[in-house]
Length: 178
Image 1 (tube, one colour):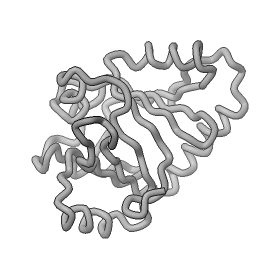
Image 2 (tube, helix red, strand yellow):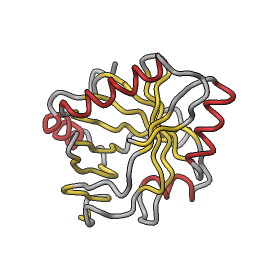
Image 3 (cartoon, one colour):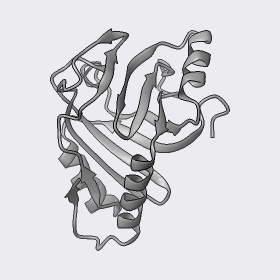
Image 4 (cartoon, helix red, strand yellow):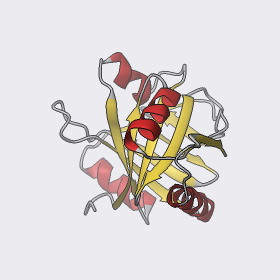
């Protein structure tokens, strides 16, 4: 748990092919199933580096989430819009992109991050949450980007269902569409 950003609930990987990552994790690591989201997601107040973009922008090519114990694993395949995801792959990096944390007071955490001089890479709101990606990454990859999330009840319910599916997993099913 971060004293600044709350409880870590997620490790998120940016990959060129989300379904290949799902296949690897289900087959080689025994983690699954992974749930995919219908795209594009409908955002409100979506901003990339402070610049507004349309809420139905193609920022994701694919998204898949699953659980390993209490930790959510997320695979993000970037879409066509230039974001922190596309920048990550274009820079030659792959793998862990960010950790996701739950916060109780989104606005207070955002204000504190601003006071600390932490840039916001991506932010917006979905029907299930408010979120922002904070540029906390270091050059040597010892600290990833932090995504702060203020979940709404539908998100907590959906994540509880996905976590239960992992506990009940048959070891065969790789993906399930939400």
